[in-house]
Image (cartoon, rainbow, N blue to C red; front, side, top):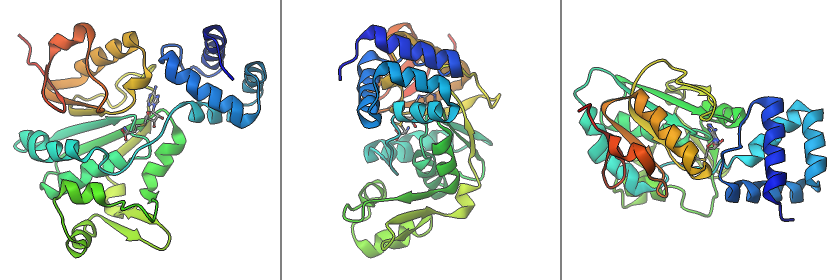
Length: 279
Ligand SMILES: C[S@@+](CC[C@H](N)C(=O)[O-])C[C@H]1O[C@@H](n2cnc3c(N)ncnc32)[C@H](O)[C@@H]1O
C-alpha cells in the first residue's frame, strides 16, 4: 500500500502528540517505506494504525521500534575501523582522559568494537565510552553483549580484516581475548569485563540534549542521520559541534556527510571529520 505525505504527516503528528517521539523531520522516503511495511505486516490501514496507537502505549513503543532500523554488526565497515585504530585513536593517546559517545548505537556492537580497539591500543583504562539509542530494547541487548550470528556466514570476517589475521587459529587466539564464540548456538558473547564498562542510556537525538554533561573527543553517529531530512541533519551537526572538544573527531556512516552551513566548522578527512579549533 502506498502512503501519501498527508497520511504520513498525520501519523507522525499522532506519535508526537502521544509520546513526544518526533519523526516529523525524518526523510519522507525512508519513513514511508517503514510505515508501509508496518501496515502490511500488521494488516492495518493507516487509520486503524492511528486508532491503535491511542489505545496502547506498549503498541506505540513497538511501532516506534519498527519505524527505526536497528541493523548493525561488530566492526561494520572494517576499513573505517582500521582508520579508527591506526589514525583516529592514536591522536588521543597522550591525553589523561578520553571521552567517546556512540549516538544511535543500536544493540551496542559498535560500542564493543571501539572497546576492543581501545584495549588493544592500551587506552581502555583512561577512556569513558558512552552509548545511547532512542530504542530501549536495543539498549537492553547492548547491556548483555550477547549476539546471534548466522552460522554459515563467516561472522569474523570483519574482525580478521581489522586485525589482519589470516588463519583461523591465529584469529581464535586473538578474538578470545575479547569475546567467546559458541558455534553450536550461533552466539557471540562479549567479555563480562567489557559489558560493565560503557555508560548506556536512552537518548533521543531529535529531542534530548547532551545528557552526560561533558564534552567528547570522539562522537560516533553512524547510519542514523540518513533517516533525517537536511534541516534536521544541519541542526544535529550544530549540536555535535557544541559538544566536541577542539580537534575532536566526528565519525559518520559511509553514506553520510556534513552539508550546509556547518561544513565550515569541520575539516573533512577520508573517513571522518575533525572539528576545527576556534579561529
Ligand atoms: C541503522 S542503526 C545504526 C547502528 C550503528 N550506529 C551502526 O551503524 O551499526 C540506527 C539506530 O538509530 C536509532 N535511532 C533512530 N532514531 C533515533 C533518534 N531520534 N535518537 C537516537 N537514536 C535513534 C535506531 O533505534 C537504530 O538503533
